Amino acid sequence: MLDAFSRAVISADAKTAAIGGGEIAALKGFIAEGNKRLDAVNAITSNASCIVSDAVTGMICENTGLIQAGGNCYPNRRMAACLRDGEIVLRYISYALLAGDASVLDDRCLNGLKETYVALGVPLQSAARAVSIMKASSTAHINETNTTGTNPVETRFRKMETVQGDCSALVAEAASYFDRVISALS
Ligand SMILES: CCC1=C(C)/C(=C/C2=NC(=C\c3[nH]c(/C=C4\NC(=O)[C@H](C)[C@H]4CC)c(C)c3CCC(=O)O)/C(CCC(=O)O)=C2C)NC1=O
Image (tube, rainbow, N blue to C red):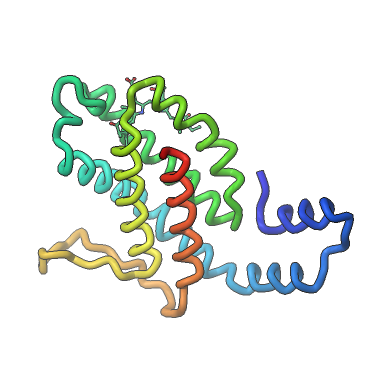
C-alpha cells in the first residue's frame, strides 16, 4: 500500500533518480491542502451509513427484482451482504482519499472483486449503479452541495459546516476512486 509520499519514492527509485523539484512541489501542495483532505475524508466517513443505505435503496428502487425471489438482494442474508459490501467499498475509497493514492483500494478491495461477483451471481451493473449513487452523494457531501431535495422540513439533512473554500481538486480525486471501482466491475 502506497501513499503520496511512498509513491514519489517508488517512482523516483524506478528512474534511479533523486526526489526532484517537481515532486517536492507536489508534496508541498499535498501537505498545504492536508486539512482540506481530512475534511473531505470526514465528510465521507461521518455520513457513511447514510451514503451506503441511500445508494443501495436507490439501486433497488430502480430495479425491484433485486429484492424478489431470484434477485441478488433476496433473501435478507443477501441484502445484508450487499449493504456490507457498500460499506467495504466506501471505506476503502476513504482510505485512498486519505492516502492520496489508489493502491490500497486496488490491492485490498478491487483485486478479484469482479471475479468474486461473477462467481456468486452478483449483478455487476447493479453494483456499479450503487457505487455511482455513492459517488454522487459523497461528492455532494464533500462539496457541501447536498440539498434537502423536495422536502423543505427534512430534519435529518446535514451540512458538514467546514470552512468555505475551493475543494474541486479533492472532489475530482474522490470521484476518480469511485470511477475506479466502477471500471473494475465492468
Ligand atoms: C476485502 C474487501 C471485501 C470485499 C469487497 C468483499 C466482497 C464480497 N461480497 C460477497 C458477497 C455478496 N455481495 C453481494 C452484493 C450485492 N448484491 C447485489 O445485488 C448488489 C448489486 C450488491 C450490493 C451493492 C451479495 C448479495 C453477496 C452474497 C451473495 C451470495 O451469497 O449469494 C462475498 C462472498 C462472501 C460473503 O458473502 O461474505 C465477498 C468476498 N469481501 C471482502 O472481504
